[in-house]
Image 1 (cartoon, rainbow, N blue to C red):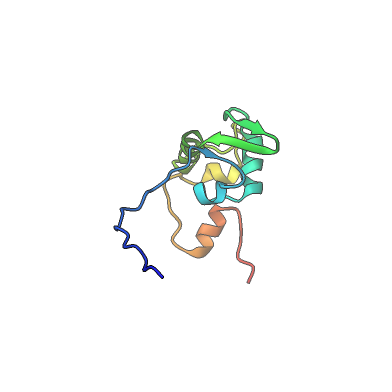
Image 2: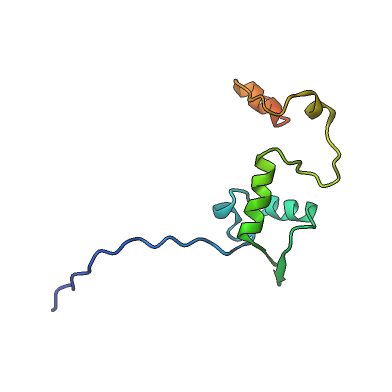
Length: 110
């Protein structure tokens, strides 16, 4: 019986995805597959490719659109906004859990 060969330690290789699909959207963008597909359907301007049922979007394009939303861009393309959103200043961050839930349009149930 031979002994195991000593393996030289190697630096880890970090791999970044080139494309995002419904299979890897949760790992890449943090949203589940259904929400990813619904969001893509609501944003027809985002370029995509289809391979059967698989929908592919270039990762840099998707992350740029998501970053725009995170910095205050409107999620809806038609510019139709809710009245309660217009009443609140955009730069105020909620201090309580109830404030965060209210900003998301939700309320505490328990």
